[in-house]
Amino acid sequence: MRLNAGKTQVMVISSNRKDIDWKPKLYLEGAELEVVDEYRFLGVTIDRELRFNTHVKNTILKARKRMKILKCLAGKEWGQNLETQRALYSTYIRSALEYAAPNW
Image (cartoon, rainbow, N blue to C red; front, side, top):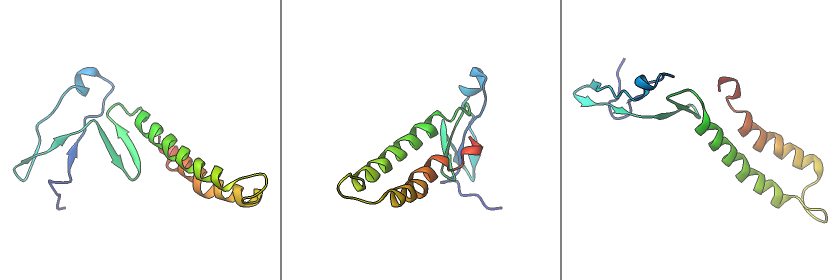
């Protein structure tokens, strides 16, 4: 398996403070690998304590932005009907909220 040193990062995952503060020096093809506190993998932000706080915050921000779009399309006198709004919510907002939820 070929690894790309420019795209490879190191993250120590632990609940022990001593381990979390540890910054190992690992090298790949002579290049030192970057030690990170968070890593985004397949749309899920993983932190070093596996708490998913950053991921939840990012998901909430994404959903709020999408809710603003839905609010612009809704109105009492004009706008989309209830069925269309419900379909938009299910496909556009709820899908963002539920993406990879069983994993975190």
